Length: 90
Image (cartoon, rainbow, N blue to C red):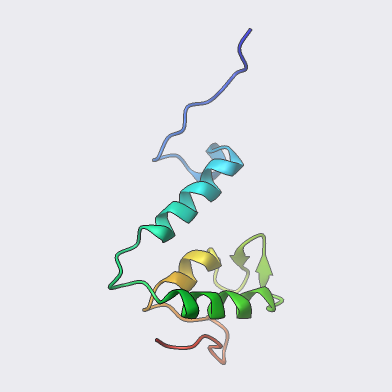
């Protein structure tokens, strides 16, 4: 008998999706952001470097604001929610 599989739904809540699917979806979303709103690769990596060292990072999310840090770090308009705003501007 085939395994009980649930169809992937783009309108589902994250908790309703298989774990690997929502992480894959998040990475694809970041990769396909319009270039005019996305930071350069170097700035993105620098922002993530700060997040990796932050004690507010938990399971890819910022405990201070609740965002997925990889999504937040990818957009020019966003900044680190810490009081000293650690991220560089582009």
